[in-house]
Image 1 (cartoon, rainbow, N blue to C red):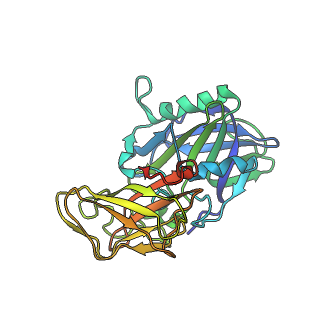
Image 2 (spheres, rainbow, N blue to C red):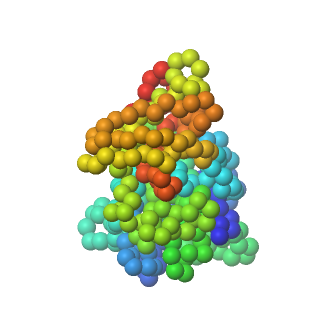
Image 3 (tube, rainbow, N blue to C red):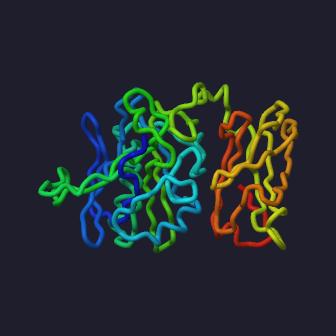
Length: 334
């Protein structure tokens, strides 16, 4: 079922606590013009294996960053719609899932555990003064007449579940749903840099049902459904002349086998699909698919493109920003 109060918390960081103990969370004290809040970030799993999967992208580029600066400070409720700013690790093409790595939360030595990886950027944000944090997850509070147990402000108020919130099993299965994933994004205005922190549990699967967010049986086995076997190499999203009927997507077969694309589709950010048709790709072969009028739409203000196999599972996905699409007639290479 969906999280009860999914949204994004926007504010400035003023303090933090590293995560230790039986259920450690990296804690961040942030403020807006009216309230204090706490961001609670899991850095260790309660289920085996305990190490979280993580990606920290210090040059994050995605169309969502065009919309976040216009949000008001504080908490904003988000509806889990495909055309909004709700995060989805699987459907949003936020990063390459194969690049997620497991990391313990606490190890001897400098800059080698999850606490320290996150802490590097949070300390920078605290010292910067102008940096803005955007934390996606589930809100709690405000808790009237109750102090925050880490930073002492009152009332207690904050956000947690700053991680993937689908594909879970066991006692956490009830929290599954699509387009409600958590993450921490940071914007440093001085150099217009975006930093993104994405976290997932190793017990979560890579492919989930489009409605429930539950695991699709067997879909988390790479040997059965290897991601990246066909890759989206490039796209012409802003052609010369009229866009409809002239946009293209270029695909590459990375495998040593010929692949039949019967039943495969390309999908856009609004979940519209276009059937690629009766085509085959030889090993190493590249084909360019021209998108007909009234198929999927590659918007010039940023978007995502996803390749789905005959079973509807994601094979590869990319995203592009408004800036990427700004040069008319140029093909974007991913």
